[in-house]
Length: 452
Image (cartoon, rainbow, N blue to C red; front, side, top):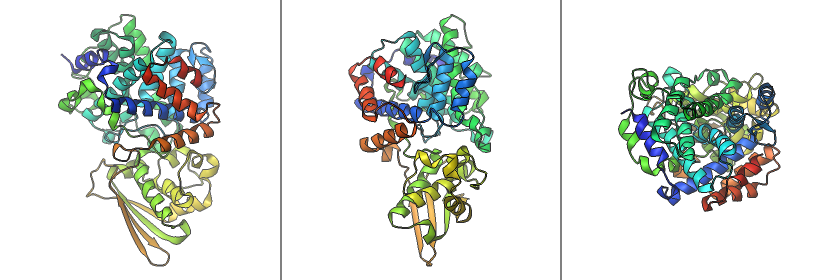
C-alpha cells in the first residue's frame, strides 16, 4: 500500500496519552508562538487588501483573527495563515527548512470553530502535534528541492494539515487518504516570490491552507481522491522529489509525533537563514562594537544561504520582503540597535540611511564551498575595525533551535513584541495562560474568543 495509508492510519489513531510531556510542552509553546505571530501580522502590508478582496464572497462563518469579523472557512483560514506568516516570524524546521504551524494551524482552527466548537483542549493539542509532525516528516524525508525552485513549506506542509484535520474529526484511514489525494492534486509552490521580494510570498502557504479546507470537505462528502499519493507514477515522490525519498526516516518514531520537539521557534522576524548571522552581529554589539567602528565585515555562509538571503541590499528600493531576506540588512540592524524586532521591518525603518549604507558598503557575503550547501550553520565573521584590529567569530548553532531553545521569558518577550506591534487588545499573559490551560482539557472556545 502507498505510504499515505501508513500516515493516515497513524494520524487517526493518535491519542493525547501517546504524546510525551516534552512533546506536549513543545506543542503548547509552538501554539503560543504561532498565535502571537498571527496577531502581530494582522495589519502587515497586503493583509488589509486581502481582507477587502475576499470580503465580497461573504462575511459569515469563521473568525478572522484580530477582530476583523468573519469569513467562510476557506477564506478565514487563508487570511489567518497569511497573517501568521506575514512577518516571517513563525516557526521553522531547520533541517528542511519548512514552516509547519503556519501550514497546519489555521485550517485546523477554522475546522474546529466550524464543526467542533466544544473541542477539548487535549484533542486540539493532539491534532496539532499529529499535523506538525506529519508536515515535518514529509519535508525531511523528501529533503529540500531548492535547486528546482520548490517552496518546501508549501509543497510538504499541507499534507500535515490534512492529517491534523483527519485526527480531529476521527476519520477512518480511507477517508484520510482521499483527503491526502485531493491535496496532492492541488500541491504547488514556487520560490520565485522570494527571489523577487514580492508580497505574494506571505500568501503562498495560505493558498495551500485554503486548499486543505477544500480537500477535507471533498473527502467528507465521499468524493474519492487518488490513493497512490506518494508512490504513484505522478505521486509526490516522483513528481516533486525526483524519486528520492527516505522512507525509513518517514516511518521512524511515527507513533510518538516527537518531531514537534525538534522544531525551532524564531527569535527574530526574518528568514531563518539570517538568524545565525544576526546572533554574531549581536555578539559584536555586546562587545561594544558599533557600525562606526567597523571598516568591513566578511561573512561566510552556505551556498543556499547566499541564494536565499545573500542579495545586495539597497535601502532606497528595498521592500519589506527584501529586508526579511537579507543578511546584510539584518546584521546591520543588529549591530546598530542591539536587537532585531518587528519594528525594524517597516517601510520607514528600511530607509534609515545609516543602516542602509552600512549594509550596502561594509558587508560582503560569500558562499563557502567547504560548508554543507543547504546548511544554516556554521557561519563565520571576519571583522576588520577602523583601528586595524581584526575580530573573528563563528557559530555552529542557531538561536531558537532545539540546541538553543528560547526560554519561557524569551518567548514571553516575543509575545509582548508581537501583540504590541499588532496593537492587539489581547493581553500577552492571558494568551499564554489560555493556551497553556489546553493541556488540562480546557475547551478550545477560550482560545477562539481571544483570537476573535
